[in-house]
Length: 390
Image (cartoon, rainbow, N blue to C red; front, side, top):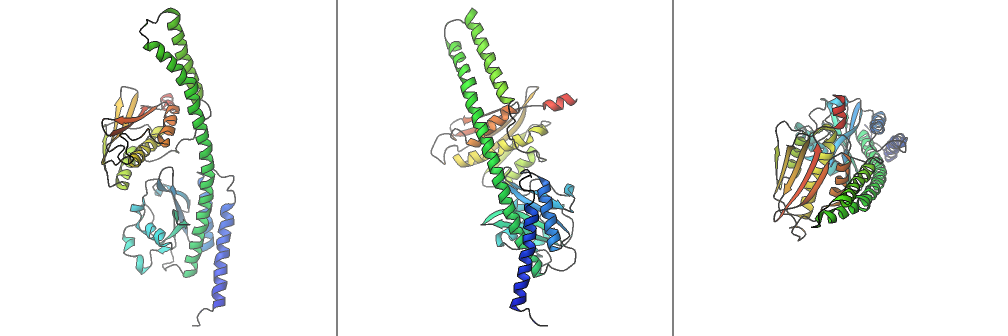
């Protein structure tokens, strides 16, 4: 059989590039109208790849910077209920890691990957001939696309090239979406900082004045008592008005429970001991799960950034009849930057405190003991809408 001539190879490469360009055009359509978390956009991307390379099904998993985990964002001909919505780590995905590290398409029918394929990336993926397409550009790992082809043969070289180029196109789209999200986050950050400044100027100043009066040794009677009462009520009214203003961006809903997130963090940070003490029968209300997990992750990152912790202790307990408290205690605070404490808390914790206020809760953080650091989140035991539905 005659070998392929350079001209034929060049023509084949041109066809592959043209097909990938078709994926690009179809993927970019509707980019401006789609929201940052729109599943339809990524579903259309998966469909475009399947139509271009003639594979049967596809699922796209991308790294979520907010949640700091890989999660499925789009599918084509895959039952979304079969795919775990969250909690996929690179340590649980050997073939995906190989595809990303080597920047090449990994086919489970290859002799070189059969040994690795004994441990599938996702237990709920249907059995079939799977290929792992790296979504990587400029050295940045965006995620992986898993495609299924049921012809019983390894993918030909041309199809692998097409999938590889399509992966670059998906990476381009992911970067464009990330830029859109960054602009939105910048707007939200500006709104949060404005809210924090308003709280300081309108509420803290009022309460500071009341505190000075109450700290006086003189008895508070008559007009003075009435003035203090009016100032406290005015501060409450100002705070209520601020918190019921435009809704600030919060973490998207999550199907993961707090104990599952603790297990994920335990695997991700095996150099420290992560202990958990969750009171039996006490759970974070589902509407607050994203906030609680966001605070937990921020507390862990803050402890690692500002100190050298050896133990992190997470507790969840009921406080009275109408509140629950999640506490994260760490040791070794300040050892990384030379301070005696973990600093005053990072920007992430400060912004989370605003989100907690808007959710009807309270976030506190600060030094605990000689070299400890504590982050404590107080939340209502039940969500208002849940109470109203009963």
